Amino acid sequence: MTWQLTEDVEEFRRAAGAYLARDPVGSTALLTVSETVRRHGPHAYGDAEPARFGWCRNGDGDGDGGDVAGAFVQTPPRPPLLGPMAEPLARELARTLRAAGIGLSGVKGGEAHAYAFADEWAGAHGWSVDVRLRLFRLGGLTPQRPAPHGVARRADAADVPLAAAWMRAFAADIGDPSGADQTENVSRRIADGCLYLWETDGQPVSMAARSPLLAGQSRVSPVYTPSELRGRGYAGAVTAAVSRDALDAGAEQVLLFADLANPTSNALYQRLGYLPLADFVDLDFN
Image 1 (tube, rainbow, N blue to C red):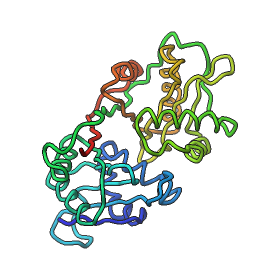
Image 2 (cartoon, one colour):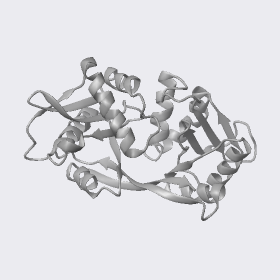
Image 3 (cartoon, rainbow, N blue to C red):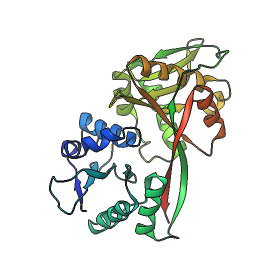
Image 4 (cartoon, rainbow, N blue to C red):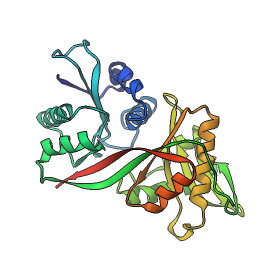
């Protein structure tokens, strides 16, 4: 089996579309990233290098025969995001990217295949776990009671400066190198109607966004409250509001990732009705 690499998102979606549709939950990040690039161009995430994609089919040939058995997306300088795949495919992908002269700082994906990729790339002792994540799916939405003081509203163009500043702060919190300028990102989300604010006495105090509906799903990210305003229930309230908006838009599945190192957010999402599905890891190469 041979990996095919491309910077053409349309080629990727044609080749891997059925693969992504088979497991839209396991492939949620690949779906949303490739759709963002499809809609907004190869530098949609504000990076100097264009996004890259890859897929691998069952069988021995390089052509169109056989089902796609694995895929990835990458928006450099971020690490590649691996879709569901067998461990040997992950190892072969590491060899393929190395042979292509592509440098990597890490890898992200489900535990087993991310570990296999990292072992092949850096050796058993050449990588470390940066973040452990859990993917949650909304069961029955149960907004917190009593709700905190305030009201949710959909953000509009006047909110871009504040929301962009909060998005930069969120990116800094999670170590995302895209944090320098979030104006375009926020503007797109607001234009899509997918960014909500929680306000108290007319002042925004928390923010949550979701991805546009795609393959029957929408994923909540990010959820952000300034540090001085945390612990008052605002994050739960705005998360419930944006989750309800996703359901009202027709989402069959509403997803979110939570950092396992943050028991507060994990417990919060479960109180809102989110159920754990699978664990993922962000790995750093030493």
